[in-house]
Image 1 (cartoon, rainbow, N blue to C red):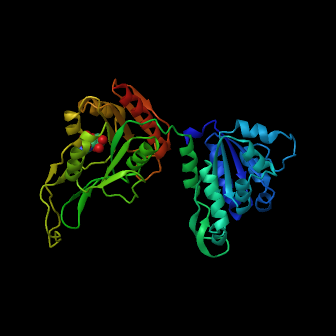
Image 2 (cartoon, protein in one colour; image 1 turned 90 degrees about the horizontal axis):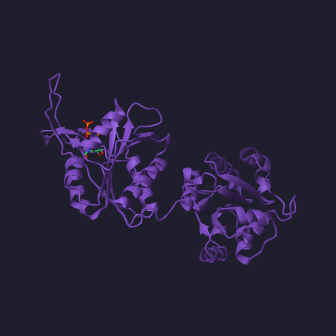
Image 3 (cartoon, rainbow, N blue to C red; image 1 turned 90 degrees about the vertical axis):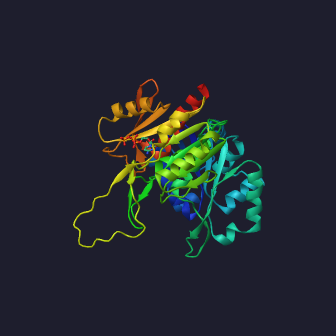
Length: 401
Ligand code: CTP
């Protein structure tokens, strides 16, 4: 969450049962080096104490409009980049929509021109109340951002809409508010992801260890960063395709080759994040190969097409082609050699024997190899952040072409 560094965020905590969940979010924002100031309504402090937030933020929590400085709400309103209201209650949303300001939170909200993110959570009956819905509509029309709520288990024991969203979803939304939404504007980006699967018989296959997380994160971030068009071509994974991204599912290296080559002319940037199998069985058995009495089995393999190599051969002027190199030894040298041979614009080198990285991990540690051979190591980061850093370099590259 590098985009949150030094951002001034006011977390306005209201009196709903989900107030206890906001402590985790505040802690994550602090860890991302945002400057977080907590304001609590009187009702919020019935659910969770200011002390919790003071310990997390190392700052005094505002609970009272007239606590120390009677103009604190004006100062805060001016300085802040983002105000988050969570869990936004029926009452606080009602006050906001009616233009009422009678405590530290609502006066700060009244005085600010910064972005406001409202995250409601309450019982379904209250959430679906037409008065409440009308208030939300009004605030949305005035530019307030809303997130959630979700359907699921509620504090009353009933199930329904009104549940506070997951921490991860909220943090993603906050991050999105701060990124440059036009960084990739004017660019059409094709990303490949996941492994390919090369069948041996109807049951068995050769594949690579790949979850697809890195490629999916690249496609999702490319969309967030304003790319005109994003196409994700993916081998078999367990992941949901990101929203607002065109999606093509393939299985084998040959299918991926066909899909990529049919599409590449429509794209300015091609990122080959897929772990394409290099070998496939020369013959695919139509029936399951039986064990019978043989104690060993020899399978003849043949090379699959090297999609990245084909792309680099037919690359048109102004097009950027980016590769990934997964290596278990001499990571930088091998990646540099692949970049040179395939005439890439950028290579992302991954070590296969590193901690905090690898297919199943949520984090990754990569080194970027630039066209002039310069290597640029990036710290261990969440795959979404790694994607953001890669795309930042791509934006620069593509715009300099
Ligand atoms: N790649 C590809 N087609 C293949 C194999 C790999 O397009 N048949 C792409 C991958 O998507 C990746 C890059 O090539 O972007 C490098 O993949 P990697 O497996 O690290 O290297 P290879 O070039 O296959 O070389 P080697 O397996 O010998 O290390």
